[in-house]
Figure 1 (cartoon, rainbow, N blue to C red):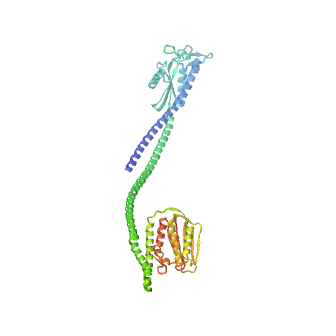
Figure 2: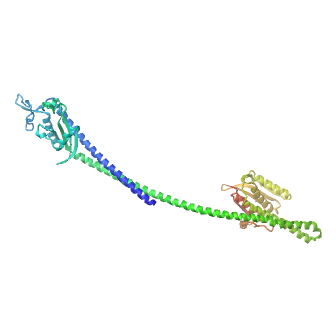
Figure 3: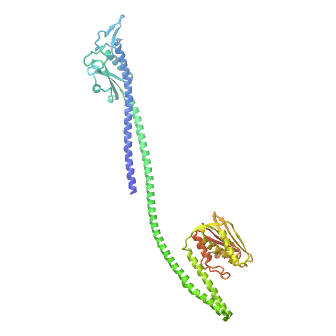
Length: 492
């Protein structure tokens, strides 16, 4: 559909372009023809002005005399008693009036420049001045008030340009023309015309016409090429837009599907959370209740009947109490880990340096016999949840304290460094360390790399990882067995 629209618009624009180019071509060709006809008219006017000025001079001076010869004969149509005179030495002269002079000048111009001059009138004195058909129409035009008549006519020798202007009478004219009621000063006596070949103008006009046609053809071809180019570009753009629209529609549908799946997954997670809440309730109520009874009765048995038991019996009871305490700690750790996924994170500036110092002081108070050298960097602050960050530092410092227990002088260090432009925080110790081939098990619940040497629930590092990931960070470790370990973490 888009392609059909593009083709239709292209044809429409091309048709309009053809019409506009055609109209412009016709207008400019017509304008060029009128221009060269006007140039010819100016040439004709110039010739006639010269002739008319000469006639005026002749009339104002009453004519002039020329010797009679084979080419200059007395004018039989001039009614003037002084038409012919003879000088004292016997030279015969004849009078040349304006009309006769015009005929003589016309003959000379025809010989020299192929220009014909003709005076005429509706009632000519000389039959040779009778008007032809074109001149008759021109004379009628003068009677209607037209100042001049001109046109390009087809003659025996090709196209001829003809121009005619009226001849108006004045006082000097009536020396030759009889004054009547139709012939008064200012009236139109007739007209004077000039004819000359239009071929020189026509040749120049033909060249100009070729140039105009070439320019318009070039314009049409170039404009058509540009139109085709932009039509193709427009088509490509429309195709890209259509493809983008399809992609957006596909993305919208995929989004809808994704939203549906997310909604389903959210519902599943909510169901799982409800099950976890039920499980937590079961752990806190159904498991703790018998555990409390076991621990309580074991304590009563040891306190009230311990004296009646032998060493082996008391040992069994103490093992029951120890296992109860351990089970209680494990339940607390599990509940803490479960709560991490539901608790909202409230970020604020947290001074980890101060927090680490306080936690280490607590360990020193609980284990005064330990010789532990600590280094804590000052001013280490992160934007995180204060309570959850304490869980992280407490677990990591606790691990460092625990796994350096067999060292005569333990070393624990807390600090900050930059890795590829990212702030990284670390806790380092010189304790038991571990084999890096087993590092992938570190943060898995209930996975312990030193289960026989050191006590623990196997939940601490899993809790740390969950806390860091909820902050959008990551945690990893680097260690060497027997040389200590370093735990790194980020908090964006």
